[in-house]
Length: 16
Image 1 (cartoon, one colour):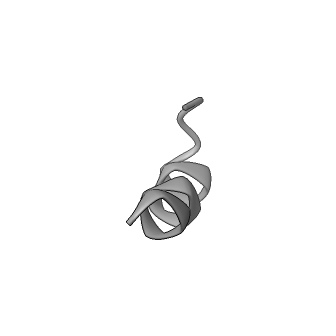
Image 2: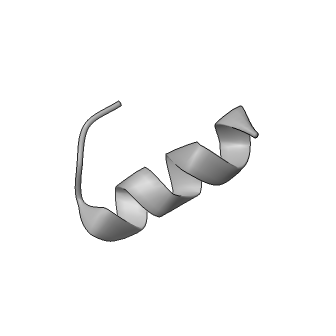
Image 3: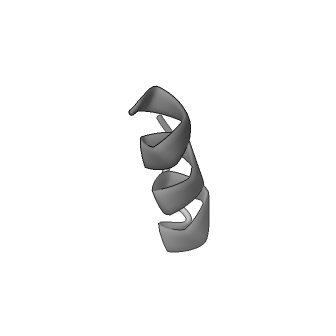
């Protein structure tokens, strides 16, 4: 789920 979280983070604009 790391990749999925990464994508969501990028979409939100949050680091990590």
